[in-house]
Length: 108
Image (cartoon, rainbow, N blue to C red):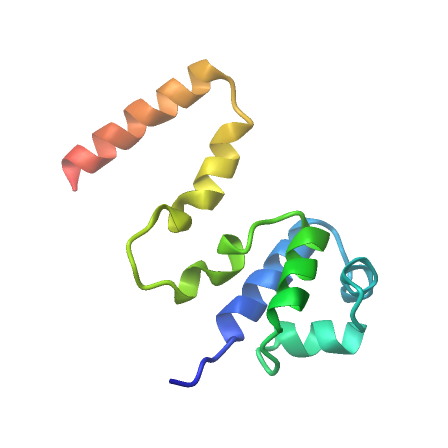
């Protein structure tokens, strides 16, 4: 099975932009060229595992935020972005969000 890295590249680009980084910034922090960053973001190049790890470290994100679109198993990986958002909230706000989620789940 051939793998298309377009969605992974789009995830890297989205996270990079959220961090206010240019392709050059990401290249410098991850030890690759800006041309390589561009090719990865466009899905033209699948990064080797060490490169992906360097990119994740440079973006301060987990690999799951980039690879979740490729995982077919139903795992908690898909919930990592939500968990990251909840982690920054105080316990009262987390409880309120849990209540809202419970209501949504019941109505689905």
